[in-house]
Length: 226
Image (cartoon, rainbow, N blue to C red; front, side, top):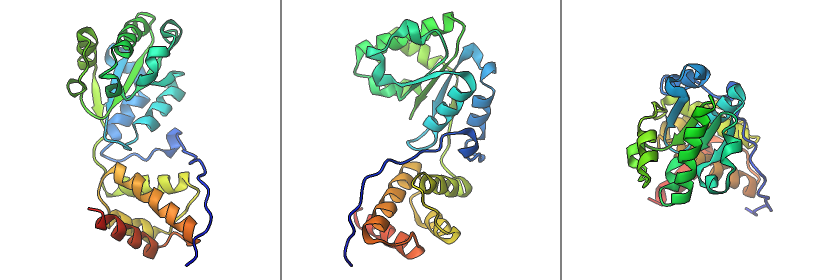
C-alpha cells in the first residue's frame, strides 16, 4: 500500500479540570489539588510515573491558584523575586540534580515564596530522597514537603488516558478499539502515550482509520522489538 505524505502537526493537549478522569488511583491527588488552600505549610509534592497526569494537574492547580508554571531546568535563568510574588509550580525537580545553580535558585524560590505567603507545587517521578540533590538545605526542604502519589492505572483510568491521548490528536476510535488496547497493552502511562503516537502515525501514513486491526498490528510490532 502506498504511504501518504504526513505532517508532524502539534498535539493539542486538553489540560482543564473537566478533562482529567478521576479514578481510585488518582482521587487522593485530585482532592489535594482541589483543596490546595489547606496544604500543610502551603506546599505539596506530586509524585507519579511519566504520563500519569502530573503536568495536567499542575495546570489545573495553576488555574485554581493563579500560579506560574515552569520547568526546574529553567530556574537558573528565572527571576526568582518576581516569581515569588505569587504561587509557583515547578516541574521535574530531579532534572536539576546535576545543576548546582538551579538547585540554589529553587532553594531561594522555596523560601521567598513561602515568606511572601504564597504556595508551591513540585512534581517528580519519585520521592525526594531519590532525586540526588546536592544542596543539603534544599534537600531537607524537599524531603520535608508533604507528598501525594498518582498510582498505576486501573482499567478505567487506562481507558480514559487512551481516550484523552487520542482526543488530543483529534482522533475518536471506537469503544472496541479502546477495550482491545486496554486488555493487551503494557499497563503504564508511558506505554499508552507511545502506543497512541504510533497508531496515529501509522493511520496517517497509510490513510487508514484507527481500527482494532490497526491497533493489533501496532501492538504486534511493539512486541517484536522486545
